[in-house]
Length: 479
Image (cartoon, rainbow, N blue to C red; front, side, top):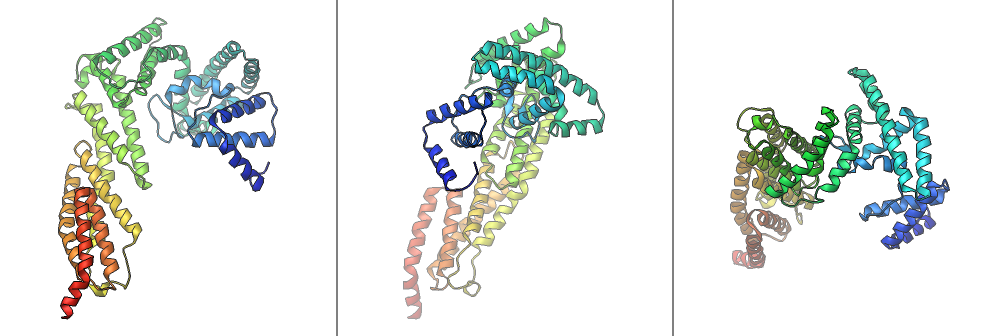
């Protein structure tokens, strides 16, 4: 089936009109056909369209599991959306799964992967879930051995590591494959831990911390009986990541460290297994900084990221004693410095942008009927909102000085210039009045952000009075 034309568009529109349950049933049936090998171009097109519609609607749909999906099921608690352009401790990018599956099926163990995948599909078609699970376990065990051999063969050779990254299709292929191995080797322990942990932890208080510690201590103790220290540390790491993903405020994971050490001093915490909790939170914090940099450079809103960073930094400084020099205190200082360096130039530039727009101009500089560019006004308003937002989070993000200076400049300039603009509007001529009015309107928008809606409302009424008074003023001058 072609991807264009009236008939295709009609089909797309029809699929959009289906109820969610009907979409789910149709997806399930089409996936069963694919598993049976009954493939047609039309059915593939319909399945792709249905999946696209479902993703856009954020509709959860139970799907028939194929071998790849079942293979990666133990990773679900540790997956993050995107392609993983920044490495997060104990995490894997969802977008990385497809290339790594291709690597396993194409290069790592093609014959075994193909045979086991076919067996898994047949078991699923026969609704024999137990057999499918056994086959997936066999696939896991063989893949772990092959992946370990592949990583060992690369070693520390930098050229070999680059070749491996190209082969797997990920810039940090070694790290990601080692994370995959680590999770799969303790998948049963992690699955049991996941079942025992609360699905969502709204308030990580003393009682909840004690209950969660009991579960994770039991999981690590069970693994330590096997006498493999590396596996015990992996249970701690991935168990902490699992807990963090269920917290309303992920930074609160550091409370596991302070409670585990019965103290808040970094040196004391560093001697306990729960030091991994701080490492995980620091890794997440660095990832948020990376995301902030990406969103900021793209010109997208960053208020929610600033709030997240502020809360996490404040939480770390409150829950832990980082006054002494330590790796964690230096890491946190680097995070705060990175945010400050990224934002302070933009904060400093905001008052100048407002001045350029609102500068009172003589009539000879104004083209008849001209107005401020709406795009420039919107951009300036965004900067005012940005400075105002940064003011709330300045202390924890090392932005206090620059934010205070910019905010003070904005408030003083708006207070004095708005009065001048109202006066020029009152005395305006017909040719320059649209421009004067657009300046006043922009000033009112900016003042609404800085001083509040009530203040902006009073200015709007004053502007209406100024416009009505303009003809009277001109008549008076002529007389």
